[in-house]
Image (tube, rainbow over all chains, first blue to last red; front, side):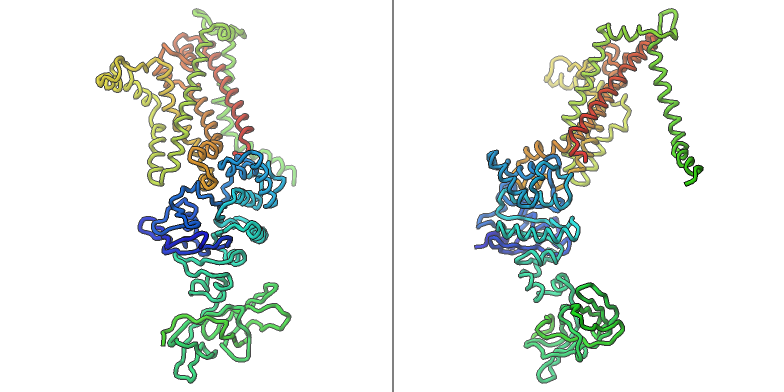
Length: 346
Length: 291
């Protein structure tokens, strides 16, 4: 049985539907990300799980029990807010201790658990600091310790890393993953950062306009995007208009001067989606000209004008000679690296 | 940098602030100094003001219990007014802050509205409601049989405190409101998620954070109430004097300017001491919230 289950959850504000038909089963100890652009309903969904909003339709169950019937203060979930929402008039230790106080944990045990929680997030020795005297990263850790010390059944993270600078964010990602693995708390992360979602989660829920676009492992969603939205949102992608030529024997999939054996059961115009790092420069294939070439350290980024419109190609900086700007090239890729959408069934 | 430029850079700020400084010195500092000097002059029924240096007025204030009573009353009224505005104003600001957009601006206007009406008109309004047998509210309550005799309001300290609190309320609400604006919008949800009920959230999370706002509002209300003139003059009249109306009477009725000046100076000095002292205390106590 799923640990946390959302069953066709929907939320409406007036006539506007913010979340619709959201179904998800989260296993115990799983790390799930809700990924999507702002306004896609990911935070609203998180707030419904937390209990700050009531779903208009649908059910949320935790270990089989209806969660919506329980007051947010009794749900026992740990929440880390985007703004951290630390209590500025309390020290770090008092902040962390607050949830234990509310649970009437005896004083001595409380002190021990607060100390352990702060040590776990690497803040031993900062017990008596006030939040406003701490850096963004430290505040973030206090917020995490405060949410974890109550041993929550589910940990909810609402864009917790978005206020940190890039380097710190990367460090916190690694640390967050380690802590989550160690204590094994079921975790839901809301983020608009695809890298964050991919590096942290067991599974990603890609959302757009209140609906789930795809649920899958990071690799799944990246390699086999279920929709144009997913492929565009998760990393860069090239979409080429192509046709399936059924007159040829056997039928062929044709994009400009590139062609491959057509997949079975499709005909007519289709869209071919291919990741930039899966395209190589070959002797045959889609004709293109390099417009700009950008050096990015470990890889080269090429922007090309191809027969089928603009294309991006990423090549590893492996020491091989790379084509220069203005040079004509042929773009080639393996049929199994692309995904084909649209087209009529035949 | 050349010395000319250096000189100019020093002179420029002075030149720019000169008009304001001159106004400040001319209409505030000099009259204030003159008032303080006046309090050391002598006065007689027939000889008028004599510009000598004596401590007669100060001795009179220090020894005559009449003045002590007057200052204690002023202090008592100001403190009670401050407490009343804090007790009503802080929750008012909190509720206001939780309202949704349109209602919020409407009720903010309702709260600030009284500031647009003269203090005299507002205080006379209270007199119309509770002024003896003819007061509207008193008449209504008596005809309904709720009370037998009119609620004593005019010439009572209670009346003064209520009327002053009404006048001062916007200052308290605005001050607490400003403190509430600084609150993290998720802070109540954070406390709730940790298992805190509504009462605990207000007592442990909201109150400590808006306390600086309540206290700075209290300083404003206290100093304005202690030096208020119009409201005590209308509600208290001659029968129930406070420091401000006492100074006024000495100046304009008894014509004993030096004594009036001594009363005014003492009131000012006491207020400055109380305000500066409590401000320093608040800043030290709530250093973390202010940052």
